[in-house]
Every structure is written in C-alpha cells, then in structure tokens.
Amino acid sequence: MELKDLKFTKTHEWLLIDGDTAKIGITDYAQHQMGDIVYVDLPEVDDEVEIDESICEVESVKAVSEILSPVDGTIVSINEDLEDAPEKINSNPYDAWIVEVKVENLSDDIMSYEEYEALDKE
Amino acid sequence: MAKKTPLYEVHKKLNAKLVEFTGYELPVQYTSIIDEHKAVRESVGIFDVSHMGEITVTGEGALNTLNYIMTNDFTDMPDGKVRYSLMCNENGGVIDDVLVYKMNDLCFLVVVNAANVDKDYKHIQNNKLENTTITNVSDFFAQIALQGKDAEKVMSKLVNLDEISKGYYTFTKDVDIQGKKVLISRTGYTGESGFEIYTNIDDAEFIYNLIIENGEIVPCGLGARDTLRLEAGMPLYGHEFDEEIKANEVCLNFAIKYNKDFIGKKALEENKAEFKRIGIELIDRGIAREGCELFDVKGNKIGYVTSGTMNPSNGKSIAMARVNISFNDDKLKVKVRKKELNAKVVKIPFIQK
Image (cartoon, rainbow over all chains, first blue to last red):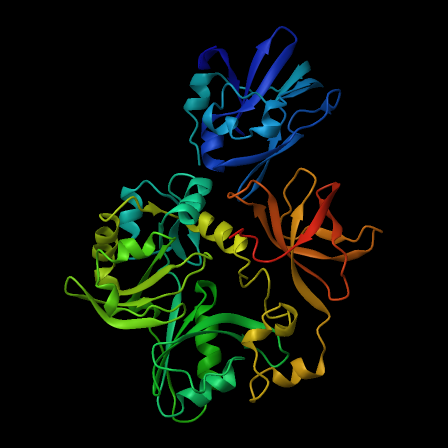
C-alpha cells in the first residue's frame, strides 16, 4: 500500500478504497497535530455514517477530535487493536485504519495524495 | 501578537510544538506529553515557566498588607521560607492562588499565575495597607523549573548543595552560578522534589543551556505540566477554583487562617461550604474531561469534573471534581458525551508513592 493509492480529505482523513468498501484513518499530519493519542471511542458495526458527519472521536492527552466521514455508508468493521493500543495511530497512521465502511456515496471533496500534500495546512 | 519568553530560541531549536498561552508563545510539548510526564516521574525534566508573574510587596506595612489580602498567615515566617495562599474577593471567591516568598520583614515576593498577573497586581495595589509598596516585576524575571528525583543530582553540578536551602518550600537568593545570580527555591508544580530557578531575563538562556549540559534532562512543555500537576492533585485557577468558587470549598483549608482579618473572611465564616473537591478514576473505558457532569449511582446530579485527563503514569482516566459536600459514596457515574461511565472516588494525590 502506497500513499498515492489513498484518497484524502481536507479534514485530514485518508481512505483506502477497495471495491465497494473503504478503510478510513487519519493522516500523519493529523496525528502529529493531536499529539499522543490515548483513546479511540470506536463506533459499532452496522452504524450508519454520513458525509461530513462524525464517525467517532479520537482523544489525545489534551483534546478530543472528531473523525469526519468522507462517505455515506455503513460500518462493516472496526479496528479493535486501537482499544488497547491507540498509540498505533501515532506510530503508523497509514496502517492504523479506524473503521471499514461499505460505501453508498463518496464525498465530492476527496482528493489525491498530490492535492492533499499541496494543501496549505494551517 | 503573543510575547516570547527569554527561552523562545531554545524552544525553537528543540523543535517544540508552540502554542499561545496566557499571552506567551510556549511549548505544549517537545516530543510527547506522555514521555515528558514519565521523565519527570522517573528521572528529571526541565520547564520554561517564565510566563508566571512576580509582584514584590515591600515596606514596613508589607506583612500587614499580606495578612489582610491573603488567606494565609505570614506572621512568624522565617526569612527564606515559601508559603502557599489563596487570595479572595469580598464574597470569599478565589481571585488566585499564590506563593509568598519572605526575603526579610520588609520584603516579600508574591508569585502568581500567568493568567492573572494584571488582575492580581491591581487587586493588591488597590487593597494594600499603609507603608507598603507594590511593584510588578514579572518582566524582569525568567523562571526555569527542574523537577524529578534526579533534579538534585543535576543541581549539584551547578552549585554547592551545602550553599542552598534543603527543606521543601524554602529558597536561597543570590546564588552564584558561573557569575550569574539566581534565586533557587525548593518548590514545584509536579509532585516531585526539585527546584524553581528565578533568573534575570538576560541570564535565562545561559542558565537553561548550562543545566541541560549536565545529564539526560528532558525538556517538558505545558501539556506535561498539566498532567503532572493533576496527577499530584494540585489545583489550577480556572478549574478547581475561580472568583465564583468559595475558598472553603476546595479542600485547601490549611491555607486559610481565621485568626486574623482578611478580605473574604466574613463571607467564608457566614457561608458554610456546600461543595468539596474530590479525586475520581474511571472504571469504564473513556476519559473524563473538564465540565463532564457527575451523578450518584441513583442518577442524582452531584457535581462536575474540574480537570481530567488520561494519566500518563498508569493509563487510567483520572479527574478532580467539584461535588456536593454531602456526597460520601465511593462509586459514581460520569457523563462523557452521550455515555454514562462508571467511576470511583480515589484519594488525592493520585500518585502512587
């Protein structure tokens, strides 16, 4: 899996699309901004997600961040490793997927790796 | 435009993640809050705390002024001692918590929270008694904190330990470190032994660099400062108390002396405490944060979280909370977003020593 195979959002989520499902995580920029991630409040399988709505919350020592969904769809799988080892998101952000979703619709705003890297990240 | 402390260049060189805090650009972390927190608990860490405020109270009336404005009693205080106090308004609400350093009978140094410097200076100036001069000297001082069980070992490489005071909450002024004069106090906001070193702003970078040459000393930011003080059960203005919260409701009664008159005394005597400060630890998974509501096991609201975090030392979610004084159970519930999580009351400080 290479970064150029992923899609990105301006809110710093990544997607790995495989047929009609997609794995979703947060980018290296996002994990660096958050600092030590200490808790992931995983959603449940079969939960529905909507574009730009919160999928779940990821907590660092200092703050809580929402992961915004880049798709409309239904959660088919959650990464339970993150329950005991949320810090995997810091050490391997592109490996530590958070949820896998069956995709109904993709957001119009998702972008390629080159477009994401070109963003002015404030 | 945020101000820079005298150690700003040091933070940039160490690649600190900087944030604006109380009007200053300060590091929230250098590497990771968890690693910095653990460094202080296991060996030694160094902090830039130059944003703190310093106010001198001098003159024949200094002692009377302090006794009138502060809740603690500074009579019979030896030179070279430090004493913690609250400072109240007429309603007994807490304007700030401070440390008072006695230089001599005519000269005291009051160290105040960075967020409250201007407010505290005005309050002391407006309420001082006769023959007292109040001066805000915050812009002349930098402050470096060296905290952890190895702090003394590090300090021994810079000064002869026999020439500085030994006891907790004591200080020595005019200590010479390679020609620079500093004040070294045995104080801190981490729950570990250690030092707070006051320097002239021009000497701060020199002293900081000199210290870090002397061992594996971890630079620590505001993030770790907060998790450390919380684990040590130490309160923070704006969280455990503020001007609306009465001084007798925060379990700091050791710092309130009713044998003398002080601003707020009447209000505190006439209004019994209705709340208290407790420590809690979550049993269910999650993190209790500031503002989360608390309920007893029957579902009655009993209070709210004033400070909360995941404790880097043991991975547990800990918090300090303000609850009804009548709440005496050992179990409770914390509302974290939509969920009600089980929690238990634990002793403050949270540190296992």
